[in-house]
Length: 177
Image (tube, rainbow, N blue to C red):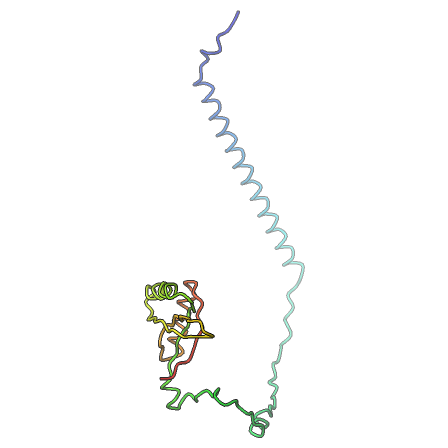
């Protein structure tokens, strides 16, 4: 007798497949739980054996002694003198020249004024004051994009960090009025 497979009952096949998946999940879950429990019990047994086998010994007392060091370099420096190059003296922090100086950041130098203006606009969008300084070098006109002025090194560092986070390289410069 021939059989028509087109009219098979598809509901029974789908039910059998879903029951097989559930059964596989339950068996896997039980096996995983048992394996985990066995591993945990094995770990507990191993740790309790090591605690009971080895008696605890008191650790020896460690004494820290202070060693007094004698540095004499401060006696050597007053006798040595370092010559400075004229024009490169840094003003001392308490002097009037140091307070009058301010700091700038150079973020680019371009031959095209259009490129310099585009960089200035990007920096202005970050909330920093920027200006363009034109300078002729070896017969070529260069346009420097400068940020600032900053009155303290701390504000200079903050601005330099903001520029670095936005992928702009900045070179600090000192400006005296």
